[in-house]
Image 1 (cartoon, rainbow, N blue to C red):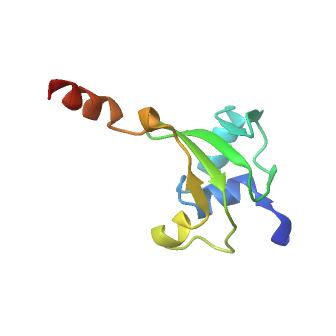
Image 2: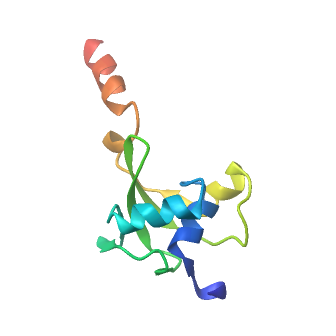
Length: 105
């Protein structure tokens, strides 16, 4: 797809949200991925810089804004440069536990 975009499944793998493209494809086919609030069922959907993705990763709902693309899967540090995490604080893992601890003070 080049400089203007990248396949959704490739980007999810390069950004290290899924270990394999097959796992990213399964998540898309299950309807567990949204691009700009629109449910996506095809992993070949093109992403563009500025798109907002919503999906489940582990035990948390992640909301990320695409900031760039990579030609291959790199280090975790390089992967973090590909997106901006805009997840609400309550959606992050451990948020309930931390909220409970704060309520005890």
